[in-house]
Amino acid sequence: MKTLLKIIPLLLFLFISCQNKELDFKTAENLIITKYKYPTVIDFEVFCSDPIHARRMLDFGLEEKGLVKIMETREFKDRDKPLIEFTAMSKYFLLETTLEERESKIQKVKIGTRKFDKIILITAETSDNRIAVAEYNVKYDMNAFGVLWPGLPAEKKEKAYFIFSDNGWQIIEKKDAELMMLKKIMEK
Image (cartoon, rainbow, N blue to C red; front, side, top):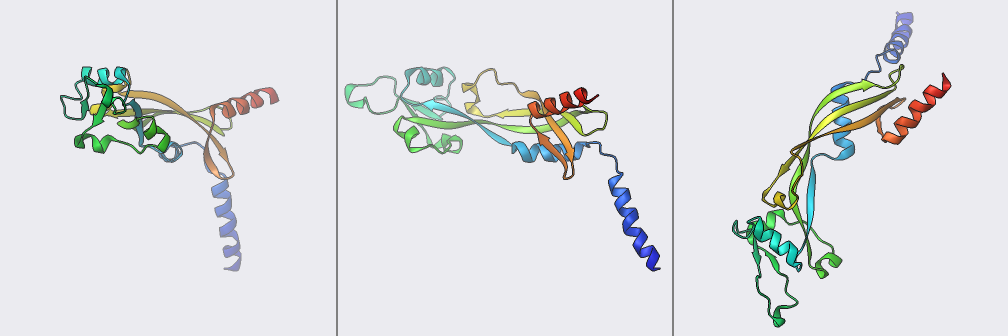
């Protein structure tokens, strides 16, 4: 019985150390979400005293939707007032600004959210399966202020690079993965 108790930990150790080191979808997803802090807020800086920004707000119909008020004519006494004022309806979309931004009449606005969607493909980049690349989709959910950033895609493919070490799988930068793969090639 004592011999069996000594053999079981040894067998468990061998079993764990000989496990397949392939990166699975769930591990990759958890590491990507943790590393890149999904979902993330997409912000846009509105220069409230800029006539070009005011014109864009009018063109995109944000005043008609009740999100902003635009001062279309300005008198000399109004020169220090911003051209764009955000209404109570837009308070949910307004982000915190620094003192310097407030002095410059800049307001950060949430125009959407960037969310992790799904992993498309995981490939091993080395023969020993210690470096892997995961391709995944990111979705962009835009709100009413999303019109301020035209051309932002609804969905985008991205890549994450992983390495297997004593601590398990970890995300690394692309350049580090490329250097490690080059080193492997040079060793051969």
